[in-house]
Length: 595
Image (cartoon, rainbow, N blue to C red; front, top):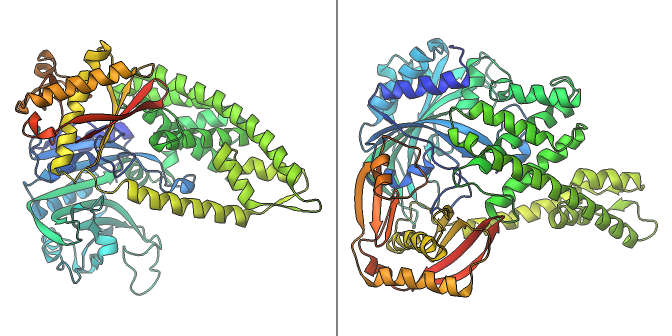
């Protein structure tokens, strides 16, 4: 295997697919635009859904990228050898161009010739078929043609070899996954890459999006079949270099060294300290990217901001467990900025914002601890005399309502002679998660794949709203900080230091409705970013000089955007702002509807 650092692996991957006529595109924001299904960009395919559904991509039908992603569904697993909340996905794409034959051949060439994995230890899986879709003999045959023996081609079911859709509806299809045999003995006679015994380690995945799942659950063949080839950068670095943990790679090693220096501890010697260093390193890296993103968010008590706050405060709690001041997060964040500034220049540009937000959150957390201590004392005063168990449900309320860490509750309870009801706490936590999940599933139904007429109209209205805000507030520094569109309403976040007055809200509505009343066509043009800027277009991808972008002119609005949109402004009906409120420090939020 070829030993590489992170920069070398990124470059090797992109150069390989460039040699196959793929255009290298820039990573999209971690904060999805116009997609209510998720809080963060969770996969490389996420920003490309409109193009997977048939929208024409300005860079062509063959694309490659390194996409930054955040997943926090298994945050409690962070601290083991492989889980990360932030990660980079190496990806290549065919948008209705080549399909299984070429995709599998290039995966073989990349993994075995360029990355030099051992062919004799190489194994693959393909979709076994079921009552809904047939067995993927085409992929199996292609692997055989390339020299992979039949006994190392495994057929697996939908659980292992089917992808998608990302939301309730959308593109989906079978995949073929690539593995390396670690040399461990078989766990059973039927041992295969589908096992969790550790004999096989996944190193790549080709998804063949050939179906569309409708709202009724039925699959229809896609007119344009797509390919999504991908692999995780952190995981691949770990495998290529023979590391036991992703935290040994060059993406984390410097942060671990700093924590050793600050704590006086040694990574790898003490299990609890090692876990703490991993969590602090991971969460600080994720916070650095969320705070430094083009559509940057701030810590808050809702949606993305809530997750960000939880990550920062969890890292701070583990700093305290190592005897390190919370300010260590600022030092680590600056180290991450230096590490990633060449791959993602916007991180360096936003360094001071990252630092100031971390410092502000540090101060707020200190106040939370103080308030939690007071509440803890109040709870103790109301517990019946003779009671020796501190209620788990109460411990969870201290955590959920006041942000008071469970570790501190346990420690304080023991100091006062109580035993914490940990099972009761876990049950209350699980019940809360179940409710949250049910609410999220309802809140985030639909998605980017929902390119319905009303969604497109609301997207066009968002452009008009953005332009109207700049006019009414007479401030060109007012820029979009995020948006979320469902079929019922739009939500638009923008930087501004104060609430809008009733007169300003009325004027924004008036300007938007005047443009709608003109019933002008929505004009799409393709041009370079330099041309777009010269034409007065705005957009969040202004660093992509030389690339072709889509520019939509909608009345007095001109923006770089991927679509979809209405055909004419007259289709939008009447625009009405239903709420204007604070989203986070220095960021306002508008919710609006079309009637």
